[in-house]
Amino acid sequence: MKKLRATRALISGGASGIGLAIAEALASQGVELVLASRRLGLLEQEAARLQGRYGVRVLPLALDLCDGAQVRARYAEARERLGPIDLLVNNSGVGSDYLVQDLPESEWDRVMDTCAKGTFLLTQACLPDMLASRHGTVINIASQAARHGYARASVYCAAKFAVLGFAKALREEVQHQGIRVHTLCPGLVQVPPPACPGERKPGWLQVEDLAEAVLYTLRQGAHVQLDEIGMTGI
Ligand SMILES: NC(=O)c1ccc[n+]([C@@H]2O[C@H](COP(=O)([O-])OP(=O)(O)OC[C@H]3O[C@@H](n4cnc5c(N)ncnc54)[C@H](OP(=O)(O)O)[C@@H]3O)[C@@H](O)[C@H]2O)c1
Image 1 (cartoon, rainbow, N blue to C red):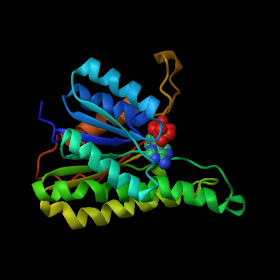
Image 2: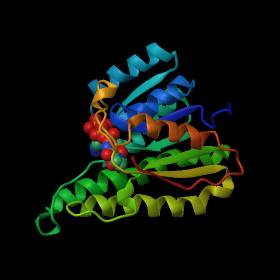
Image 3: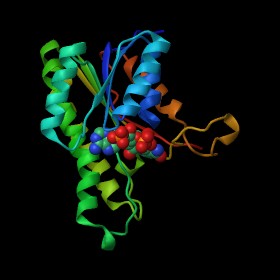
Image 4: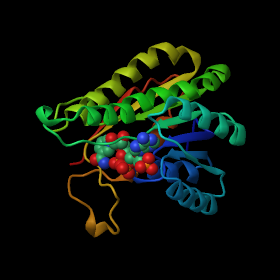
């Protein structure tokens, strides 16, 4: 089995759903973790569980990704306590369910800020260390909504298209400086995960499928350009 191209990861939204499955998979491979989102109680609970189970350091980091000053300050704290991050997983995101004609301006801002601005802010915080060491990976959890339009999801589609465009531009800037940028575009994923196999929804992806895809990207050789991975359940 090829070695993972990561030693210390920050996962936004790492205490629930897809982010938690990615955290679990990385911890099982000995990667140290920072789990970052707003709910401190949940972050602490999952960090303690992963640390106990896999024996790696896991730091809970409470932050609101929509607030740039908070993201920069909290990243500095995490760096101070664990060291520089060489894998950033931009996973936090929120959905929305409105027709364009009814979409409140505040809802536009909430979804765009969480999905798109949050991805930019965390990436900007992590980049200096990656550039200095000429080593790092940024993985974005976008969506099929980064490729297709869906009714009642205009702002979500706009935000995920933005994530994909941001990733493509970032890749152009950093790919020759040892930094990889990958974007996963999953269709429907069953979140929260089913309690038992019998509760699996047919045709939906499972959170472990995303975690496997993350490990796959991290096992590719330095000469491999893996930009966008589309995934849908069948
Ligand atoms: N489930 C699907 O069908 C599906 C399909 C395609 C793509 N995705 C994408 O996958 C990612 C993970 O979603 P999920 O399905 O696993 O749902 P989830 O469990 O609700 O995960 C979303 C995460 O985002 C965090 N978050 C929300 N607002 C935040 C903020 N302002 N600052 C920091 N963190 C914030 C949440 O933590 P806090 O509430 O604690 O902040 C939560 O951990 C999202 O980007 C989503 O768009 C999901």
